[in-house]
Each structure stands twice: as C-alpha cells, then as structure tokens.
Amino acid sequence: MCRYGVEDMELPVAGSHVTMPEGLRRHLTMDKRVFKHRGEFALRQVGSESILVPIKNRVGELDSVYVFTPVAARIWSLLDGRDIDAVVEAIGQEYDVDEGAARTDIGELLDSLEAADLIGEVAAKLGE
Image (cartoon, rainbow, N blue to C red; front, side, top):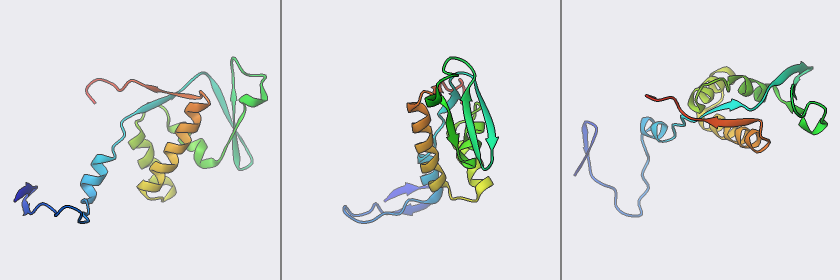
C-alpha cells in the first residue's frame, strides 16, 4: 500500500491505465515563466484586428508589422509581468475556454512571438 492524501490506495499494475486527479494534474502543468515585450511597440485597433507596429528600430520595415486577432492582442496585453498560468487563467475566464485549450493556444502564440523576437523570457522574481 502507498499513501496518497488521506486514502490508502494500491499501486497500479504495470500497463494499467491510471487517471490523475484534477488537482494534481493542474499542479503538474504549472508554468511560472514570465515574458515581456522586447522593444517598444504600438498596438492599434483596426476593425476587428489589431496591428502591432514597432516604434523604434524596425519602424520602416513592413515585415516588422504584425496583425493580431482580438485574442492574440489580449494575450499581448497580459504579458506585463504575469506568469503564464495567470495569462492562461485570464484568457480562460474572459473567453470561456477550458484550461488545456487555452494553455496550448497561448503556448503556440508565445513560441511565434519569441521566434519573431517580439518577446523574451525574464527571470522569475525571487521568492516565487
């Protein structure tokens, strides 16, 4: 017998399917990374989309202008020192989407933004 919480449970047999409790699953997917914008940008609303334009450096390059959906623009605005878990929670609540889907979509957007050198990961604050 192995002790998990307040209940005694037998360890599963090798090859058997085990369902992880929701609380434990959420704990294992915690993401405390923090990203910030690299450089100065202006985000402007144009119709139903948002346009991200660099203010310095690449200002004249059309390749440096990015079009965001409303959700991507909201995620961009949440990259203000919050960790990824807080961004996932905010998007999940605001757009009524489950945590797994929000986490996957946000991860893909962050990968794209980082590859375009628009954001960078910052060191977590001590004590967190």
